[in-house]
Amino acid sequence: MPRRSSPSALVTLVLFLVVVIGVGGTIGVLTAPGAWYESLAKPPFNPPNWLFGPVWTLLYIFIAIAGWRMTLRAPRSAAMRWWVAQMLLNWVWTPVWFALHLLWPAFAIIIAMLAAIIGFIVTTWREDRTSAVLFLPYAAWVGFASLLNLSIAILN
Image 1 (cartoon, rainbow, N blue to C red):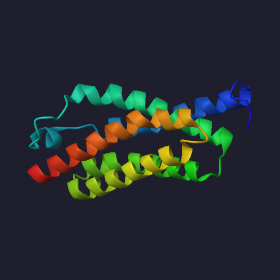
Image 2: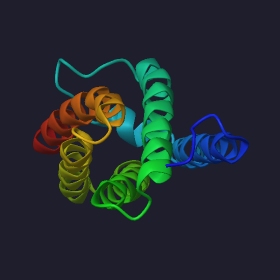
Image 3: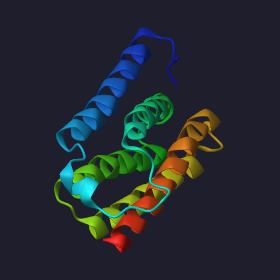
């Protein structure tokens, strides 16, 4: 495994951060909640809208670091396949929910995303505990978001 402090490893880290935060942020801006989302019936545990941006920014940083660490360790591993799967599902969920307004397909996507997140945690737990731990808050948030997605779909 290349040293994480080598110049090429640090460039790779920056690329992971730019891509994960950049793509996630761009999708978020392009599909920002609007009148449609405001008009939906929501459960009492729905968090305030201002919370989502900071939470996702922090989670995207953790996701990028975990992906970078696993790329340095084992770029063609099962863990990296789980990482790519959860990232693609993450990026697909937002437009399906906020742009297409497809509540039930979005729920299916978020459940698949949660499964991929858990798959990443399980496959990295022994070989790179730090990467696995970086995904624990993400799993918790997506678990909560899954419940929120389901609740909103049922209410609407």
